[in-house]
Length: 306
Image 1 (cartoon, rainbow, N blue to C red):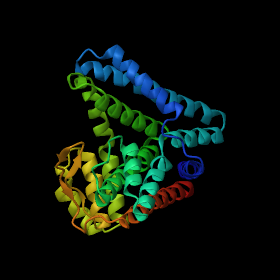
Image 2: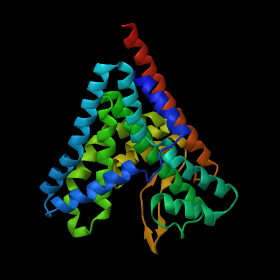
Image 3: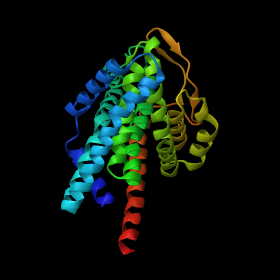
Image 4: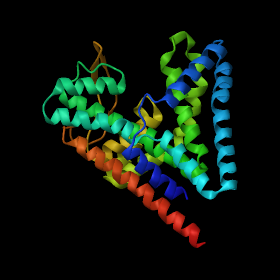
C-alpha cells in the first residue's frame, strides 16, 4: 500500500503541483507566528513547549484519521496517505525554478537567471556570475530534493502518514523561527532547530547514500567522509558533499552576496560547475528516486508474498 500511495502521490504532484504559497503552508506559518508571539519569553523551554503545541496535534490527528479511515475502508486509508504525501512533498515546487534558471543560462540571459534564483532562495543574486548561479542552483536543487522529496518519503516508509507530517512541520518551524527572529530572540528557536536536526539526521544520510549509489559512488563516499563536517549545517553538508562527489563537480566555495564575501567550504573533487551540469543534477535526483521506488516495490512484494 505504501508503494502504491507513493507512486500515485508523485504522479498527482507532477500533474498538479501544490503552489509554494498554498493556504495550508501559509496557515501553518501564521500559526507558528502566533505561537511565537504567545510563548516567546526568551527562554529555550518556551520554544520547546510551542514546538510540541504545534506538532503534536498534527501528528495525533494524522494517526487518528488514518486509523479511523482504515477501519472503515482500506482504500480510504490509502487516499489519506496519498493526500498527506501530496501536501508534504513538493518535487515540482522547486523544479520549475531549476528549469527556468537552466534555460536562462543556456540562452546566456544571466539577468533573468539572477531574478529567478533571487526569488527562489529569497536572497538577491545580483552579484553572481553565470557559473556561480549554476553552482548555487545545484546546491539548492540537491537540498530541496532531499527536504521536499526524499526526506518525507523516508519517514513515510518508516512511520506511515504521520512521518512526513512531522518531518514537514518540524522543517517549517525550524525555518520560520530560526530565520524570522531578531538575534536576541533566537533562543526561542533553539529547540525547533535541534529537533529538526535529529529528525533529519538519518534521512540526510540515506539521501546521501542514494546519491552515491545513483552517481559516482567512490567520489561521493570520499567527499561525504572528508568534507561534509566542514559545512555549517551538518545535514546539508552530508547531502551536498555526497551530491558533489556523485556528480563529479565542485560546490560550495566563496560567494559575493550583498556586498560581502561569504567564504564557504569547498565540496567535491571534480570540475568547476558549468551550465550543462544542471541537467546532470536532474538525472541524479531522478535516479535516486527511482532507486527508492524499486526498493520499496521489492519490500512490498516480499511482504505480500509473506
